Length: 594
Image (cartoon, rainbow, N blue to C red; front, top):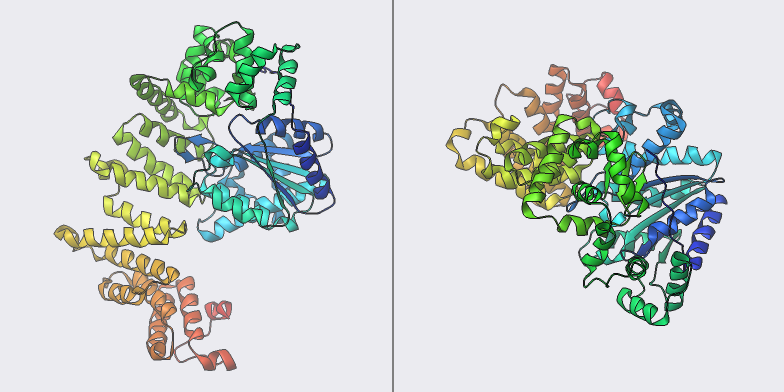
């Protein structure tokens, strides 16, 4: 189904359009350019971007992706996944893969499964993903300038913010690329995570900011004339302007209400829902169903939740698109303004709220492939949580955490794991359902907190797990987990510069069972790496040699190589003269280490 809605007239934004045009001109000349576009809800950010990009689709490649909001959570890398999907749709999978530097596009599989199975995760995988996205933009810009638009950054998850920061900072290498980022200024409360990012980016010379102010009365009149094809009476215009305070969205809604001869709504909620209430009852009901799915919802998912086939769904939604409540967005739909969706969702009765989120969860359980990974798993977890089903909220959060890890979205993985810990006591058979007990979840949470840069939290979770392990007599016979937790806490303390990391590793070395040689080797290698200074030189050398011997015996080249490096760092003679320290074997691992 293809339904096209006519955009309202853009007024009062000539200066902002000119600023975007100047930025594109700089990008064409190979000068780094980023524009941050801010404005309150309803100020017309999307309208401005649509007008700007519409003027340049013939001479520039326009890539648009939006951050998506689910409750209080964003979806990891959502705008970049949308952009990559757009490129695959327009250029084809093979053509996009060929543009990736080195020809290996497996890293992009973390954004789009069509590119295969991603390799091992970790900090290196995340860095490789960022570099491949940057490289892809560079190659695209070789043909013609690229305009990359990231909308609704106030909903950006941490992974998206990190990738966006990387692109802006290294934009000097990506000539002929213009980055445009939009966000709601009224969403940026004092502790909002986007605030420090905007301040940081604002200090970069290549970054400009555009703030969409409210309309003047004269501009509001021009908007009214464009919509009504006549000028309202001065009295009507005074009333409309006073109530809207110049917000373009509210001016539009009030003009529509006034033009229909209906009384002005008494609250913003009534104002936002007025256009919905004029639609057929069948369409209104479907919009209420759609509101539980988020700001943007795929056609296939809405069809499954509503229990309608394609023809019936298209017929029911057509009045909403024609009435400019919904807009067609790729293979799905988006509310014309997020505030309309919020008003609809908040208007649901408690029973309706639970029932609708349950229906979304059940539809996704039946066919998770309706949505691309990891979005499907994360939305499933969101819906079970919003449906207040503790059991399935916990189970789905476990799977969502694994999907987020696969995409190196560690902040989102940490959020899912934290939710599991909050729900744990509400699910008596939680361990049986996920195949892991609470201590396993705590240990994974500690690792992920470290990867996400939440060092204090990682230490707290590791310490809580160790305390819990010590309190449970039945777990004392399982020293392996204690060793793993001590080693993890040591790494986090070391990275944070907190004392106690050496004590943790020494204690871990004492606890390693004899039947766990690889774990012992890893603990000893970590200890050797963290021992510094003349006073511990002998201990460092002995510990590194022990780890090296274990690695050699087990045929574990990685462990052996790291231990050799630890030994080399502590041996002045090795560093100065290239002579092997006592106990160092010459071999492939040694040569690689050197």
